[in-house]
Image (cartoon, rainbow, N blue to C red; front, side, top):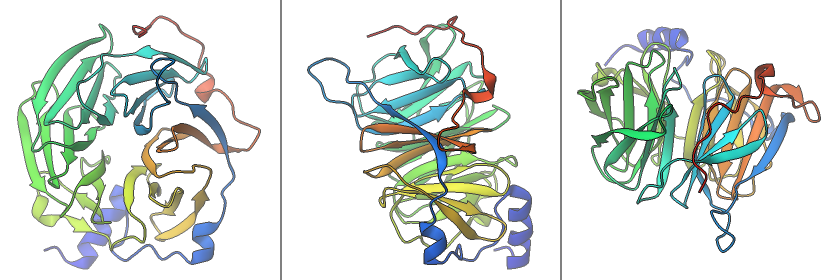
Length: 310
């Protein structure tokens, strides 16, 4: 085990300092941050079906597209510029829980209620590769920031890492005692994850023995995402999104509005996206207050990529 001071130093560099519990008072946690928010209702696959519960969201790196999955087993693409759903990718045979765009945006990885990780070619809109996961009921998938690695985790608490280009296994480690719900690479290729054991863990996949875990949180955790080097967001069964200052380990407040478990999060330079069991997606803009929501990064509308409509 590394010494406490060594872990603190490593976490500061990684944007996650300290091993103590996040020291927020009840008042801090309940403070409404009042970020500008666009609410998007997920559409039913047909007139006879209900709107799907949202189980996964993934924001493209240029913040122009959003991939959304639900209990209808479809991967839907939402255009953040035109504010419209542009269509769906192939339907998988099982429920989908986790999505991840590659940094270049040319690939989309998905996992769900099976032991298979699917990788789609976003240019040709076709399945590119399937990878074998450590267990069924997979919940989380992520690309490293350089695009060289892809990792996934699920019910068994084990994370498996592959080389993205070849699909060759690169590392494997058990980090949670219960189901992994969410994971993300930081800039040092360490993996930030949370699970049903109510723990947030930081692990180097190539030195898993040095993995460190923060104390358990109060509510059941479903998702964690880095907003920048100093802040992260967590969400779960209390229907809210908590924003944390990682340097001071204190809560900056909460984002409220969802009426069901906030099951998934995805973040970019300007936006934080959340999905919920209430069948809604919320797009939060961190630099604007209510009434000031604008198109992300002043993107021009581009209809050159048009997935098949089902």
